[in-house]
Length: 308
Image 1 (cartoon, one colour):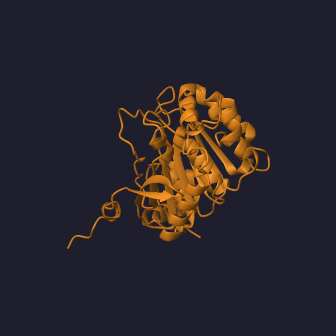
Image 2: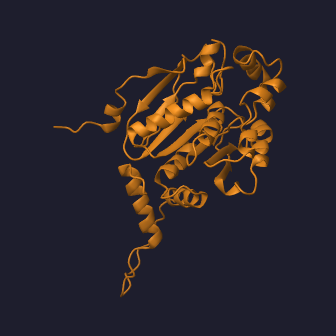
Image 3: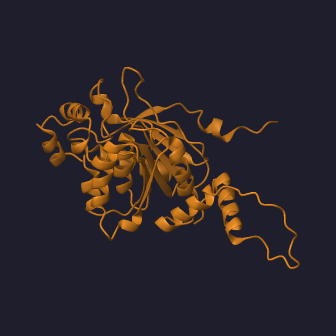
């Protein structure tokens, strides 16, 4: 008898819609192994090209994953994104944060990793901050909607979801659209901020304000990974292959500290080096400690285990 594929059986349940305080929340859950839940947020989309609800595809990891389609986008069929902020009077961030933590508890997941790019990166930053001890992995995220370089999208969101705000400046005063301001007030999560150096608008208008908002007391909770993956501009310039090594590190790290995340990312990402065979020493010293640690991390990641 052939053993079932755990990934296939876990994803056999179709996406579903739940309601929290009257808010429609489309979600798709893949039950995996281990003690971590990966929460996935999608970016903006052309509504005439992609059906809604849309779910960020699952990553090739064994951990449980929960993909959430932005409930804000029900407000207007032309809205390309709502940044998971919600509409006036409904407090989506706290309602959805509670739902995520309840789902994690139901699955027995004690570690939560929030992942997204662009508008989904904004959501990853915001929701991780609402969940102390969690990790955000945000790629090319927006961080201040009032300085976003596509103002028409923000204005559509304002008119559809926050009609009492008569300007983007007023929106920033009454709605949670500035994660820089949120993080400037302090935070107890960790952040892995991935940024394409070829995305000049986001480097200047989004990453720089976020960097300025992090005070010295919290600087060791944020890792910036700025690189170039061969794609200029914004769309797709920090592809999932740039996220995946950090996600694997977030799942495998023995403790949630920046130092441990960096060490784990380095250990998992080191390429194998082939060297000419040499005669064995008369008294072998045993395997190198770094090789042992790397093998242990790979073993635990493969088995879906996270050290306490």
